[in-house]
Length: 377
Image (cartoon, rainbow, N blue to C red; front, side, top):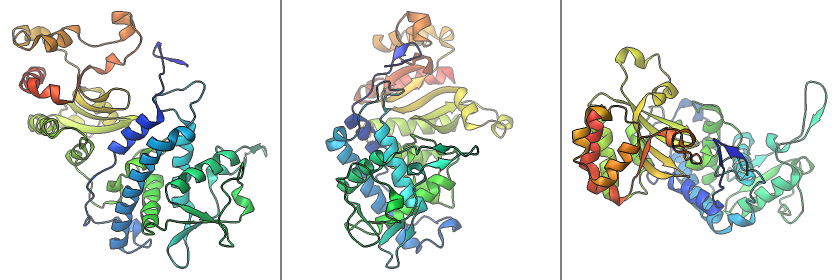
């Protein structure tokens, strides 16, 4: 394992990675949002909305198969660079996006025809040198086997099924591949539009190993931008009801007090709350605002769901802190910072702030949390 921030990267089991990804899939998708004009020629609006919901359901199954069978496909690298560093996961999500993006609907409209997958195709660089594809023939056939397990069917131009038992696959040898989904063919419409959104509409450019497609961020398709509150409500759905209420009340309490909330996705998902002057808001990027955060809500594969506080004024309200439960007092008094420099321990990313798990235990100290944050704000 390699070293990052002074500590080894401990790879999570693929089942845990898949479970985390599954929790980020939206449970509720509106059936009446207005689509961006970009999708007018893809299909009728009603079919696109139905397709997105069907694609969302496909992703639930995709994650379920990763949980149950992922260990057969996702082999750990020798030197992982993150807790979710499975090359297979990067490969299969890229193949899925490229099937959606580079394909055309068949004449019958119930399947997709794809003749190129750039990640699986060698290229000639500017010096005339041949460069190997990011996903070789062995990796491609492995991805198609897994996607077949999830319900996709792959056939050649002669309508015969692609032999998924071969050791490797070169798509150019088949001319094109027909992709169908007999369980619900409208899912392919969802895959198509979500892949276009991934490639063309995201605020940040898609990168290798980017699993954003697995979150089914249907909001990219909407003409009207979604409020950050809508995102927050969607992402905390796996938590107990009382904890969800606490988080949403916290959001409302501090946005009412004038704090700006931004959502950033840096592997983990952060909802960051910062005190920003109106004159500064237009000049600052989301990353800039994130860097000035007072506290945040974190969804992390490594740390779970947490409230993260970057308190800086505790010396001004020590009498208030002494009224808190002892366990909370200890967390606050310890503070936050670099684990190696401050405590001589391996990195636990304590520089992010003081982490408090968002589980049932937080309800008993919810008022103390609000008092603490009030004094910081």
